[in-house]
Length: 270
Image 1 (cartoon, rainbow, N blue to C red):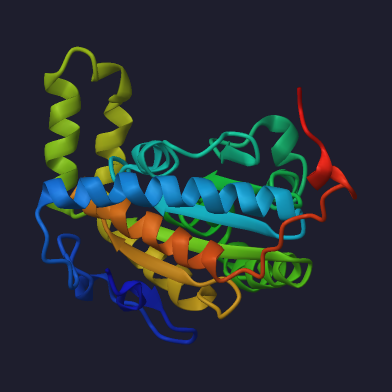
Image 2: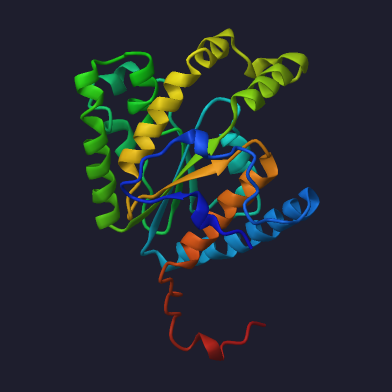
């Protein structure tokens, strides 16, 4: 059992990512093979809980995944939700805004993707891009993006008040590990399509991104929408932690089965 509380950022606590080891294994003492086996087991348990969530139809769950390139957002989704019935689960990727999206406020495209009753929505990147890349790349004036921390807190408070349980995970990959993963993309012909020279431009801005993440996490980790800083250098442990967080989150909901149609217990199917 992993104590995931060590990865959770308490409200009002400043975050220094240098204090969070991307290779941390917490209190897990098993092998990599044992960890992967546990992920498969947890994925099946998550499937059962997701079915219960969907049948209950009263709760909504939002998982936000943020990370630097190569930290494994796609891979995390694939491994954690591999055994989960796709009904009631939806992935919303947030890429560069379209012209239509830019013609609205920055939360306009986000609000329409939040989960409905009985649904899990996974944000692959999210509204946090508007205090991360927007900040680092100076895409809007500082006086604009600085106001967005309060906007985001208010937005997430609204979702929580309306019945959405929010979990936010920063997949914490190290600078050194990112170099190895980028090089692997270059070296493998079947992975080169994932590499862009622009990735190296972003890598040069690593300190700026770390500062942006630290402030975003510090200012927006709340009781109703907590951040978890998840060690991501070991892919299998990253997946193990995220699946554990989700199991604890869904397991903490007050889920009921719908009342069945009256009298069906006496039906015999022939």
